Image (cartoon, rainbow, N blue to C red):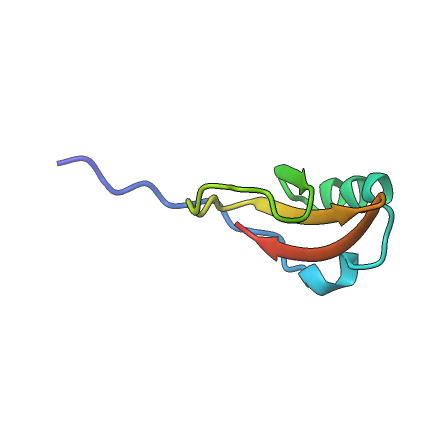
Length: 71
């Protein structure tokens, strides 16, 4: 029987620290801090609810991050 894969770890980072930043700076900072996937979404976007380790999501309005969450 094959061993279960160990999920990679997420950066020890606080999503609320990105709120208020412009989208480009927020994405650059997230990648520097080790996030493997960064996703910027307009408010009200319809998205799937699958959780992806290492992904950081930004809700962006007028080029400013208004909400941020992991997964």
